[in-house]
Length: 133
Image 1 (cartoon, helix red, strand yellow):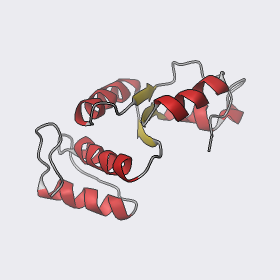
Image 2: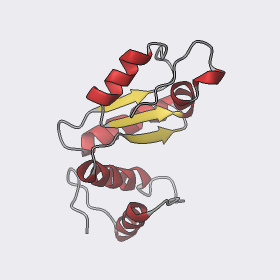
Image 3: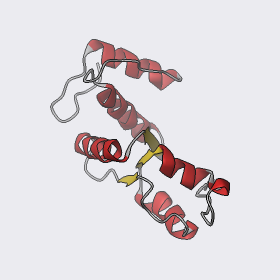
């Protein structure tokens, strides 16, 4: 069983989904309030411990991006840097955002619109692509 996060203990099905997700793509089709975000946090923690890559958490709305960012922050160790992009930031300064993502971010929570602006800029006038390696 995964160690508890901030006093929460995963249910058996949450552990099972998380373990499956560690090995491949998983769609967690669970009811509202069943702990999908908690499963994601367990997986994010695992990913942060096993690699130094940026973790991206995609959400459908601005309000949900803020809610998820706050929950993720509350459940991860101090020092994990979480950034939320929701489409209201000016993404035109490519150097600024690449630097911010490379040096100041471990977990990126973003909406579909902001991911579109950041990673598919050709359809957005004047916006620079943020891909980096």
